[in-house]
Length: 420
Image (cartoon, rainbow, N blue to C red; front, side, top):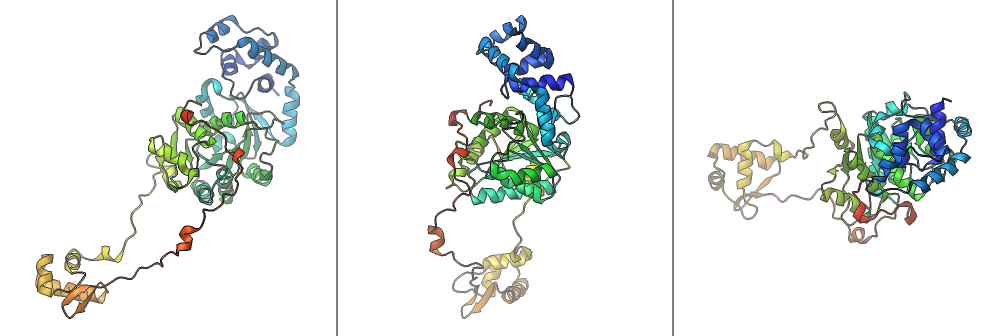
């Protein structure tokens, strides 16, 4: 353990995750200098003066006292040893595995990251997409998330998400099925399994990818840590796609962080009757996000120009598209009711008589038209699909896999697009 590792491990116990005041202190005086200042309960005068000029000056005395008490109880050597026993490693800015895109977070950049898994975090995040959404996901949301996990992974992109119920879990499973690494960003220590029923999922993620956290070992999640954690999901990735999100969903907090970091943001549309897609629809309506309907479209959004373009979707070809121009004009001139003779059809179509007679014979053979006592008319086409029974319309919507209302973090509507 280096002195820098020890100092940062100690500060990770002293300060809350995402503490921007601690972040500015470390940026200006280094981690070891910050530790000395906290132990002495004396912030550098120029630093205190600069903090006092903030728009909302913090209570530095209270903050310093809290840091001091926590730092006195911290044992960085024990934390690093506990991490090693569980298989985790501590990486810090400047480490070969450190993702440099986290530097875009400025003073809220994590002091370090605990990483547990076989993949290299920095390499895995070079081409990565964050996929987030509702914890109480519908069957539609879980299906779409799994497809994105498989599609992105098979195209060589790493999936980053939070490991929660619903969309998070589905997209991680999709990536694992594709035999690709995935990055799980926790709001607790990497040795704490939350939710507990995802122990098998996290074990598989560690074998193929990594599970990471800025929380020291043994720390349990809180509502605040979930929201603060979301900035890491957005910062690690080239772009974020929201698969499903209600108007008060923590996934929209991740979207807000992506926007503040100038990352690409996509949203998957859902049924207009689904409250779980209302947040996605708001993002699209307010032009905060790009409409995304497939993994290929997300790669097109975040990829390198010329290398990751999605193929243009075209309407499916039908037999009528293969008709020649004169034949299509003759077909358009044939009435749907009654009948018309070849001469009348030729005049209406603007096609010569010989060409009209030839086209009528071919159209009749193909089943487009039929001869009647009054001439030629369009043949009634049968639908290729059965009518849906009324019971299918009246059936209640599918029950979400997880309906615990506490799983979706509250996020006030008027702050959806604030800077985190």
